[in-house]
Image (cartoon, rainbow, N blue to C red; front, side, top):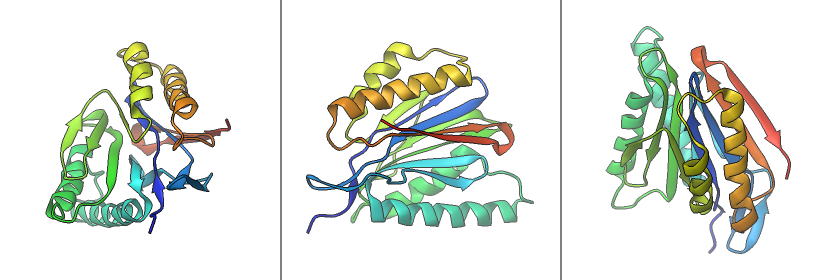
Length: 201
C-alpha cells in the first residue's frame, strides 16, 4: 500500500520584521502525482504557522493537535499569544512520546512574538528542535539550501525575503520530481498580520 505523501520542498526564513514560508503544491503516491494543490503550510494561531513534509495523514493530525494544544494554552494565559519556542516544545513532546512508532513527517514552526521577534524552528520526526535564520525540509531541501546559503543576509526586507523563497523553491521544483505545481508563499508579520500568495509554475 502506497501512502499519500508530500515529497515536498518547504523553505522558511526570517526577515527584519517577519517570517516567510514557501512550499510547493505537489503530493505523490510513489511515482504518481496524487494532488497538484496540496496544502503544506498551516495556520496554527494568528501569529504562528507550520509547514509540513512527509505523510499527509500524520501531518494533518499533528496540525489539529497543535492547534488544540496552543489554543488551550492561550486560554489559560489570558489569551496572550503563545511563544514560538513554547509551541515548538509542545510539538517536540508529542513527537518524542511516539518515537517507537514515529510520525513520518518533517516540520517547521515559525512566527513573530513581541518577546522573540521573527523565529523559525525545524522540528524532526523524533522531536529534535533546531532554530536558525533559515531552513528547508523535504525531498528538495538540498537544492533549496544552495540558494538560501548563497542569498540570505541579515535584516532582509519582506520583498527581498519573498524573492529568495521563490528562487529556493523554484530550484527544487526544477530538479526534484516530488516537488512541483507552483509555490505557496506566506508572510507572517508582527501582531499576526499575514500575507499569502500563490505563484504558478
